[in-house]
Length: 95
Picture 1: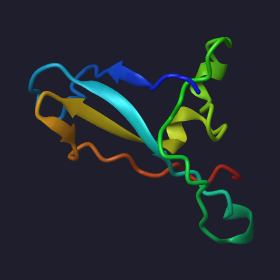
Picture 2: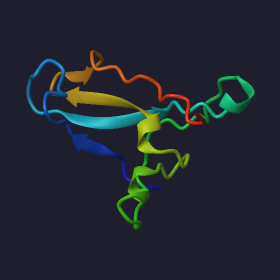
Picture 3: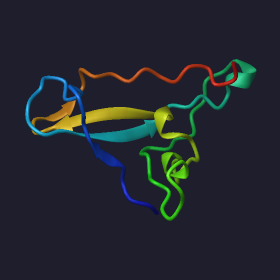
């Protein structure tokens, strides 16, 4: 199992501008049933970095194989999680 993906927040992504913050990627929101007009996610709960691969492959989750952008993004600062920076689900990938 790989390590968690926590990154420093940059350029105003701290929400309220308080203290040091970092970004973590939580549950996968990729719709695996889009082809049949349904909604189904795979149950992956947190983005895990693939270790020992090139930079492009590091953006793929070791648990579910989805790109990091499919995972819900949280900005965490010294006061906790900033829920005022919502992440919209990814657009239809089959267009």
